[in-house]
Amino acid sequence: MHKGFKKHARFAASALVSAICLSPPMYTNAASPSQVQMTVGEPRQIPIGIAKYADVMSSNAAIVRIGTNGTADLTNGVSVFPKRVGDARVVAKLFGFIPWKSVDVHVLPRQMVYVGGQSIGVALHVNGTMVVGREPGNSSELELGDVIRMVNGHKVSSSADLKRWTPLSAKSVKLVVRRGLPDAPLTLPIKVPLNSHHQLGVYVRDKTVGIGTLTFYDPVHHTYGALGHIITDADTGRPIEGWGSVYDSDITGIVKGKPGQPGEKLGRFAAGTPRLGDISQNTDFGLFGHMDEMPAHLYRKTEVLVALPSQVHPGSARMLTVLHGHQVESFSVRIENVARQNHPTTRSMIIRVTDPRLLTGTGGIVQGMSGSPILQDGRLVGAVTHVFMSDSTRGYGIFAAWMATMSDIKAKETNEPIVQSGDIVAV
Image (cartoon, rainbow, N blue to C red; front, side, top):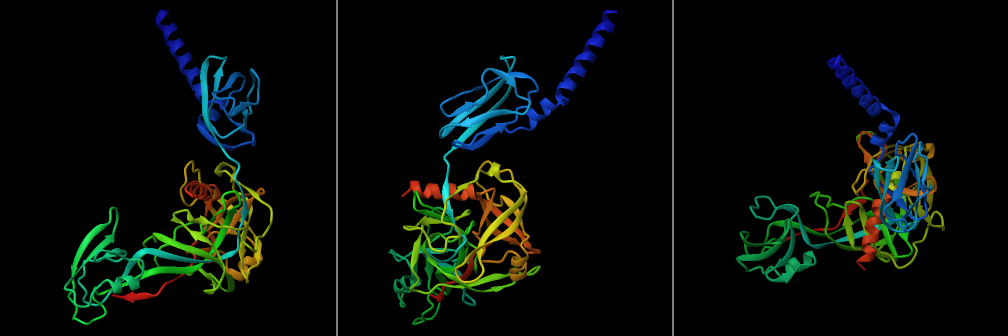
């Protein structure tokens, strides 16, 4: 009898544990996030999976206020009111003493920006000169993508500097080369005939120019974000470390995209074109820099809120871009998939062009649309970055929050563009 009672007790306990684990509250508790981001002044419901009464507390009521007082029915979650920037923890306990769920809440400032969509000209100079090719038969130790920073003790800012400080009669040359970190010294013998103008036997480039799209302008910090991804050299594929400027530009035509062959915008900006701002960062998340004044050709002259990643969802949205001249237009797209990203990274969403006029005119997403803003629910949620090679109607986007974060870093420090690389010079 005693053994039978123990057996039934163990069976009952197992059944109880299984029932608890499979219950809707436990499932909701397991599926709910352990950390969330919120903006000041925007309340949110946090699901915690409690079917009946519980105590919910905030570790810092000055930052996060709980919307209920004392015990309450929290079946649908707890209302959290973010009051100011900072971090707090929301803790729920069953019957006031059994730990159930804790959620770390990160309260971020409200970021208001002007959305872009206008075409910009980009001129990005290399910090040195980049090796982009070799002459036939050259056995130089220089590799494609190397950036020559110094030659014979002199700083190199352009291909002209490299030629100037490499004597025709020299038997060797001392270089400082960026091939990683730190920069490496390199001594090269000159093996080509004397009086040749190609002493090193390589081809170099000192700048890249092209057309891209402005994503937003921050009027508080006078900063901007554009492109949504890094600019790389057209020949080597290496990221360009350097400095530069962005300019007003206009679109003169469109090469329509098709499967296996992405289209492109045809644009121009003249040497005398007004300079809009500087380029201080070329990052995985786009171009960033300072812009003294609000750019022209805005689609709307009112600020919009930058959405948090958690506020972006599959569904209809609008994309802003230019197809002719300077005019920014709005086109319908659909966000098909949203990645869960708690920290800045690329490829945040997949978008599909649904606008008949845009499909007719461009075939979908084309080069030069990189940086085109994506709006959803009245917020700036992202920017176009890349087109699918197999389907020009679809492409990737990046969360606008990640771009705004990089822009904010710049302020505290106080699909690719159409790249037509700068002139290649033999040295």
